[in-house]
Image 1 (cartoon, rainbow, N blue to C red):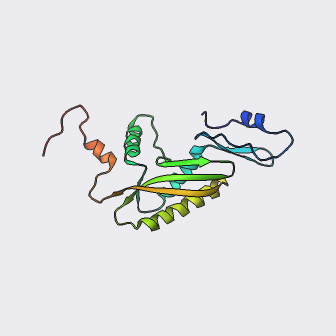
Image 2 (cartoon, rainbow, N blue to C red):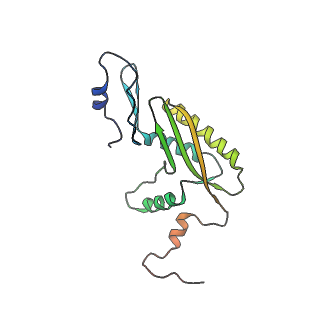
Length: 173
């Protein structure tokens, strides 16, 4: 994985005999968090923070899905590919620095949910989980509500199953 620093690269960049703070992380989206401990460094890839935030968001009831409509569609197709894995971090983007992180999340909420209250719960859950598990300070969690799922709407996965797969035209009703 090119995003994750190896122990060799961390050791090469570390000042010998000191425990100074880690150098500023690269500005790329694949930057990793590296903290210096008493006997070494701990490196966290951006994907780790995104997965933790995704799991924490899913724990809050009232969320139908994470991500925009396009991301969910591509994710559903990727999930069907043999050997493909579902992405827990779908709909989440994190920026990770030395000691802080900022998280953006896109949601589809269930109809009837009070959106400001849901956003507060999601924000609190993400901040608690990421800070507890990574030691990073979460400076902001930006939430974009992209859609409201109505009770009679099919899911993206249900729509794909109903669509004809062999190039045939759908039957008209």
